Length: 64
Image 1: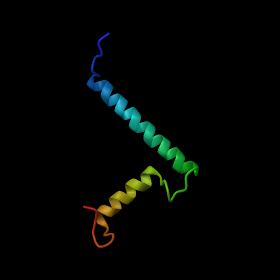
Image 2: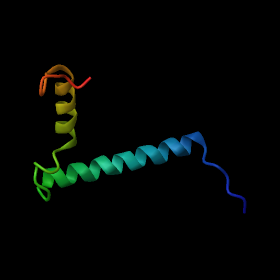
Image 3: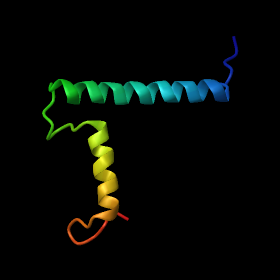
């Protein structure tokens, strides 16, 4: 049998599934308390901090 390359729809589906699993496991670990917050904050906290660093100076400069 000759291997066929994945179709665009399949590639996107596998990518979104993997990303969803990654974020889901990350959220479960951070919310459950299995990993302390200082080592693994929740994904939404990381995103909020990222956007805060875009506008609020840290160590004398913003992120960009």
